[in-house]
Image 1 (cartoon, rainbow, N blue to C red):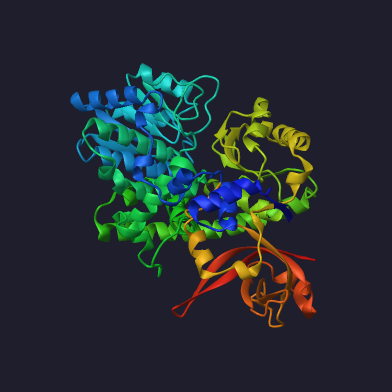
Image 2: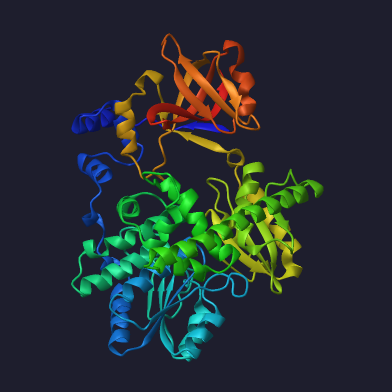
Length: 565
């Protein structure tokens, strides 16, 4: 691991903010490192207000989108709400369709089949709309590159409203409205919304026209926070407000489908981390193993008993997904070793038998072993389809774009993308991708990095300090849980490897002359046991965490890495 200590802000800035907020310098430093330098910025950070959300009509084409939807309602047209099969897409479809149905019945949903249709807007979906007399399609979390498909729909007298958050190409589809804050000509103040977030801005705009307030729409925020967590968008600005209030809804009055998924969990309060690891994978599993429409049915179901049945089926999908993930990851690692490709700067693997629904997860798993930009391919009809994942700091989307001569289509983000190509182009693509990554991946990005906020004396770890840190939540990109470093640490002699396979490390730390011991746990750090043996001093990087055991809550260090002094 590469440890990188963030620069310490100017002393005057720290002192000024500390005085303005009546907090100590350490808290002020952590805030400034997150771009919060004034009392008003801190107030918005610690006390988000629903009124901090931007006017939806600041988004380019929003007026056109709302006008077209109102016209469809006035003319009794059929509206098809169309979205991708992942969490962001299915939550967005659930949100917009369930909102429209509160005052207009002629609304249906469509999620493309991952295997037959692939990602995004499909010709099959447009034909379905035409055959069933839909004259307006609202596409969510997809469509920004569907130029030919929108043209095809226009010829069939079907209008498109596109709500996307992916990077546009050089041309935009000729839709009635294209809502995408990443458009070059869009002046919307915040461009990091997820697809479901753009969908929420659409219903916010419709609601305003219908005399509704933001409070009338708050019940939809459990869907928005789920998408924000799953899509790993920055937890800053408007996303932070949406996530903050979304978690309140999720914990106080979640919709029946989400309640059904989490009802067996013995948790008093879900955090955004719980959403990432508990809620999102289950919603995703429907689209990976069966069909994304199952997720929409679950998320739009009002009856709790019926939702429980859907949730049970999706739980089985999630179990199946875990088994597939484990098997395919093992096969992919074998393939890398057999082909002697461990020394490559990129990882590109392929098997026609791998399940298309889990190749993205497998790509992430491979990065855990070989820390490199990674693509996992499988057979998809007469083409090959891949999911790409990247390492911190490296833009895999740009790297793929430089191989476009061998690609049929692609899309995505800096850290995650998807593509399809013809089987005969696989080897050429693989070779070209390796060349591009070799030329563009800096050496320092080849080692996993831990960004450290600041050094910390363990004596500063108090319940009061932890209470303030908890108010930094919800955590996510650009507002990660604070990471600290301490040196001169020793174990009190009772440190040991724990877990069935002894893969974790449990310690009682002493810091310098301080006689107090501090509990610490290092998941996956069992092999570092020799570094802490026999009273050796060492340094560690950690989060401060709470351990709940038999009704007692105590503070502990959640170790991320340890090194010799």
